[in-house]
Image 1 (cartoon, rainbow, N blue to C red):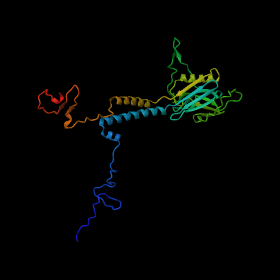
Image 2: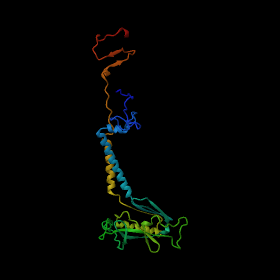
Image 3: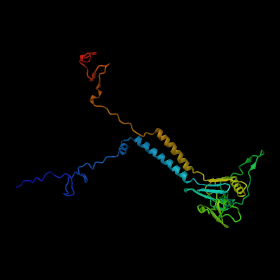
Image 4: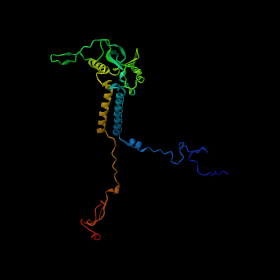
Length: 313
């Protein structure tokens, strides 16, 4: 009457059909081993590594990041303007700060003239420089004294001395032009130029570097004038920005720290030595033609020293 019904074994795991389960079981444990998680070998090695090894990797990664920051900083502020002219054509290569290089090829007849100008610290045009050029003084032996001609900063009004090149949009009529070199409209570099009256475009050559001497400004203007008047058949002018000291400092410290970390740091741990069990001290030497079979059990022998069995005689 009060007999208990035997319905089989008790449910130990939950199932979506019955809804039962043990109070110790976790959701998702079906007893098949799928819930067992194993770390990757590299993660397991990192967890078992010593603190000195981990800190060595941390410091190495920091110096690598420092070198990357210095390189990117120098690469971003690497700005320059190149003007290369040959007998019939000229090439204007411009690399703005943080931008890609732009190259424009135009005819020699489109280069008009060069003049001294004054700009602000960013290289923007302010006015034409009408100050008289003063050549450097000379001593009794005829050597130049560059103190009066040296110029490394702004004047009393905060203006910088620079020079600008003027280009024509097209070759004027009546001027002989080589047929193999077409005229250029300077559309790729038009945003860095200033348009004047009469279809003339003006480009300031010191947009990316203003810490130059006054003598160099005059020398560059004379080179351009000589090329325009066909007194010379080749012209090369380059103006580049000064590299920032922050990028150089990051690159040097990152490289030195990287080398020191490789020399002093520890990047792997030695494997622990595994010791044998109780019978590891026993050594069995197999008999050879010139040696007798000896068994070293580590216990005192009952035979006297030098005893040899008849089997090995």
